[in-house]
Image (tube, rainbow, N blue to C red):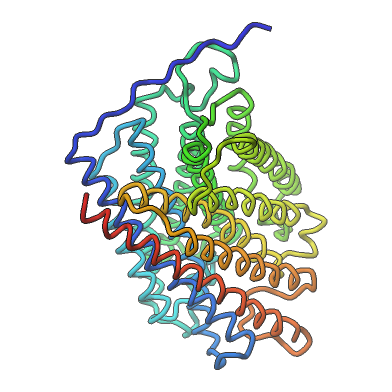
Length: 496
């Protein structure tokens, strides 16, 4: 077998000092927003679990579902933009990005979030973060018509600015690396080409898939607009559901891939050794691009009107997309840290534990994507169980680690070991205890999205109360993290 060709890295991008300061300030503004919204959305979740446990006054159903909608949309959107902001910050080392696009994304996102808060917490819009058709446009007096229009306007605004943001990232990569090189095809074929960091391959894969989902959202919103304008009488419910889940499925998964990409890029700084690209890494992430787009069918197993073949495609592609990316990422993380002179800090520990949580949650998701299991677990608490696992103790830990890395680097203030370890312990112990209550509920067939549990499933009330205690630990750890990270960000912002 012939030896692999030598690959030389492209020269680093040099940013003008003024542009670098502006970029750092914008990154820190994203961080400040994240630090403010994360505990706020946790409190919304605690309010729901508190109501389900009867430890808090019973919420009117319309209020409960408004909070549910804001909590779900808020958390998904928050971690998507946090991951994108982190990726944009790192990408500047390799490619040129347009600052006006990043500012547009920031201002547009802030505006969209404010609109969502108004329509859900004030207007009581409660269709859920899925906002499935036709419920999303059928208030039946629960919320006002204006809330429906403002909600769809907010989703459209967020979709537009995120599309521009994704295109700019992909365009910047394409100008630096031809697309086949950015996808690592020369690693697969053994042909000549530059050294391409695995971070670039992951981001390229993610942006292509993300744009696919955003296009789906555009088509869906166009159908909503035609119906609300009276041009069409009614939309096809199954088509709308497919478009919605293609969009939502890709957005959630791409968010996690961007977090993993940050770990690929930043964890080597703590290991003192590089995370090199190779054939198997390129193969795995190209399989992700091929299969993640069609894996969304696993959300529609209960839709009997779907063709049976697409249901089978959903199961096969779910396994096909999960195993390669997880294997190369977990193996790569272990190989990177094995016998390395690791500098275990808040940043590196959180990123390392984030990979573990992402993998554990992925196993739960893979179980649910198996048709035989899904027949039992569909719409039970197993669904929020795996979702919260790969988010709360997976992606969130990766992002928190990356954010602390930036804060420490820009401020020059070293970490307080005692407080950082306490924050990590509280978040992880509380996080795993919290999701375990969901898993136990799922195995008992307790349904999700219930504002109150019937006496026949009163064990759900006990699980909700126990979960509330665990999430209180998480919130305490988050506040310690905010103190440690926030004060460093303030110093960094002043110095930028």
